[in-house]
Length: 347
Ligand code: ADP
Ligand code: DAR
Image (tube, rainbow, N blue to C red; front, side, top):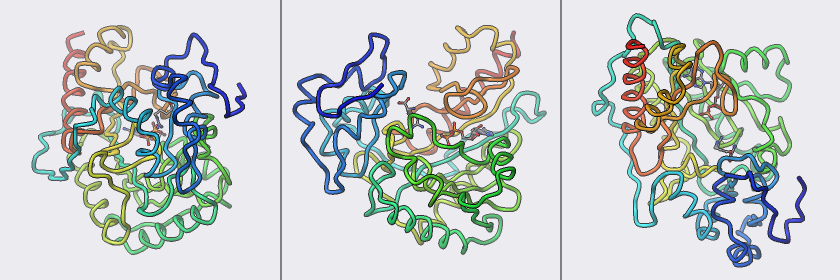
């Protein structure tokens, strides 16, 4: 649908996004004339959820200031999604010793692969929805320059999307290493502007350590490998985050943690996931969803967000990211996966 950006948007009866739930006409009138110092407006923040009425959330921030200037809308959405109230505060904990996650599937009967990622954005710059082309290209050169200095297991090469051979790009996506071209949600948020300029992927030789540059966030720092050795994947990610932060300063808020373009990624900005084969639970989705809900898990398809599962294989990850630590995120996912495997065995 199209929208004039000036009047209160029309929401379908079927719209269930957090935007629909929390944007009243009064709130729209109260906020519609506010503009951040980067020129980012309420209309830009909500456009994705207005144009895509099947959004789950429907809002994006254009900069750190957005989370303050539009907080009468963002705070209720953050509270709703994360269960995080205005008086709650976030804290980080990267201590691997506090994680108890021995491989839950050493025989490889269920877990195909493990992936843990964090989103990061650079201090002092706008977020993706409000960044200019020049600033985005600056991010690419600063981040690729910083990654070039990584050593040992983290050493690798940066591959810009501009000029990338189409067969190579398609294979990287098919193998779950590279992001897909920006979807309609990102497009309506202004995150696909100037695509593919300024975007790219860094990875080591074994593709167990990867960094996406300028997709939904300015960095997606990713550790992944086949199998269920969650502790090794987490350890590699922590090492990478600490190394990169020696040369790149990340946007961090004392209450909201690491700032990201989508409020669902605030706090740790961490999604810890496994691709897991659960064919019997796949035939009993009410039980599957019950277990997922009780362990704060999100069920996704295996080709990323908004995709379907295939032959009983699912992407299972932590839903909570804000108000809990990085260790808690991975523990959430781990404890849920143990419960799912146990139920699958019972079936
Ligand atoms: P995010 O937004 O957290 O980066 P997406 O859902 O967009 O993740 O998925 C990005 C890519 O990562 C997709 O190709 C997806 O299949 C892949 N992926 C996610 N989790 C895993 C996993 N545990 N093992 C292998 N690939 C994964
Ligand atoms: N598709 C948008 C974003 C939801 C969260 N996922 C992100 N940030 N990739 C929606 O509102 O459904």
